[in-house]
Amino acid sequence: MTRAILGSTKGSSSAAASRSAAAPPAPAPPSEARRRNPGLESKDDRTGGRAIARRIAFVNEKGGSAKTTLVASVAAWLALERAHRVLAIDFDPQGQLGKVLGVDVRSLRRSAIDLVLDGLLGDGSRAPLRPTAQAGSLPLVATRIPGLDLIPAEKTLGLLPGGDWAGHEGSGRLAERLRRAKELSGYDYVLFDAPPSFGPLTLNVLRAAEEIVVPVPLTFLALDGCAELVRTISMVRARHSHPALRISMVVPTFYRRTRLAHDVLEKLKCRFPKEIAQTVVGFHVKIDEAQSRGLSIFEYAPGDRGARALAALAEELEARGSDASGGIG
Image (tube, rainbow, N blue to C red):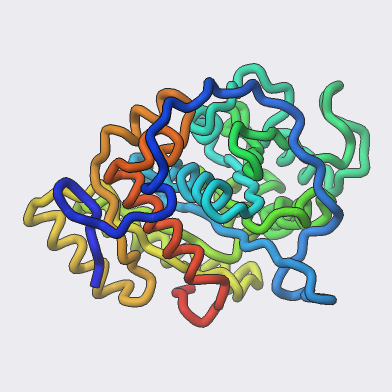
């Protein structure tokens, strides 16, 4: 049974909700991210009991779905409450993920565009594309939250032409670039914030991920977008030999106590009986306030209903694990 943690609903509190609401420190300036040990593994190269990072893309082909809020909140919760090592990769040219995580993206010399261009070159061993870029390295930035690093985005990411980048070989370059990155073996989770439209960047994200979280606003038009995404995933699985790709969670967002929202939610439950999240996320002012200060809701207002909702959602995603038997592809 899906639970809504909204208004007056008494949701189960998490470890985040039990913390005191002391005033958080000011956001720290971005710094060089913590160095990691070599090698990103996938499910196909399990050896010697080495850890395998879960690669989860948050995708909705329309904007205004709370996608970035979910990425930032899940990443923060995993790092703060579970002490997981998390890498959040922003592939949305709007670059809002860095902003809500308290990173001044305007001051950075490297961003996701460097990662993309490295991929276009085919490997990270060639000469750096910018004077500040270290050949073969990822454009990592350490956030204010211990254990949570970011590859930020900027608007120039949206200016990349299609061409070879959009073809079969080109659309797999991000996955290959990350597979070769020595820094990634130290992470437990790699979370992608995908663009709010389908194109070469989104296709690269889908091929680099293995799980998909779909935030769905409870509106009539959002149902059509969700159906389109399912078709897109099926295409990627079939045409690009990526059978592991699946929807692991569908998250109802922007819930209101209206007949339409209720009807849309019931349709989502029927369409995605296994994937539908048990937590429905509503409107929470404190979440916006936290983001405006570059803080997670768990730091800013840990006892707020919004914090409880997002903590429950993150805990549910963590519990679902990476068992490929449970999702839709």
